Image 1 (cartoon, rainbow, N blue to C red):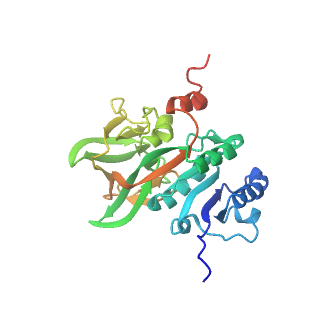
Image 2: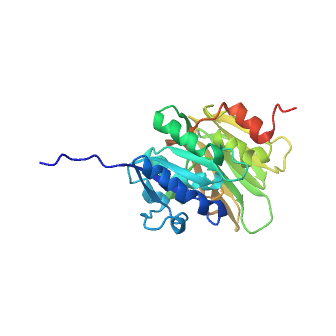
Image 3: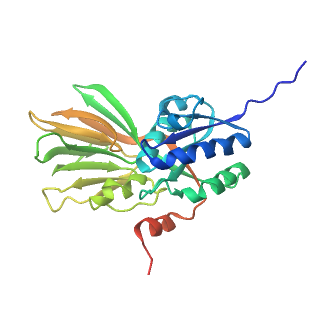
Length: 291
């Protein structure tokens, strides 16, 4: 009887659309993986550069037993991939193709040394918490999302201030009048929240940040709360609508009386890397400590 052979280890490849470098990177990457016994699947954005390779959506990749997913692009591409594969616990290798890249911190020239480190079992891993968000309308849940960076309640088409009541663990905090209200994870503290004047949190700090954008009251400042808390936002828009945004990529209109509940997600995002500390990333991206 012929002995059974183990199936090859599989990897997913996800790419930023319309990124010129991808055309040159993907064929070499597939050759490198194949020569080391890996099979692979690609997302539709990568497919034009990977003929005869199985194409799966990013969400469908979560149903496969992938060793890791390689993201070629910027933080936006990684955010999309992270929300898709986090429920399956699949690690991500984020390769930066030219953008600022707090999350896709691996430069292209370090791609293959990083992959070698993964094969040798010497690659570091960062575990990032996520925000779970639910939208309740007329006492029924109408939508739920997972966010790696942030949940934002912003203005709809009308250029006016948003009005939101905020509760922490059912205790009233304040009525906010602002352009938007951000609930960010520690990872998201270096994204929209930072641009709005919020603090930078180390990724392993167990907390959320509530940051108003252009608040009407000067006393409304960013608020840091434990990630064991439940944050409730009551939308107060009258006859107008606001918009709920998840990582700046997904979302839906929300209306007067809608309640948005945010709490720590049961899922986590695993980022593989060979770089140094978080502060070294800040030095690289924000030029901290450079003379």
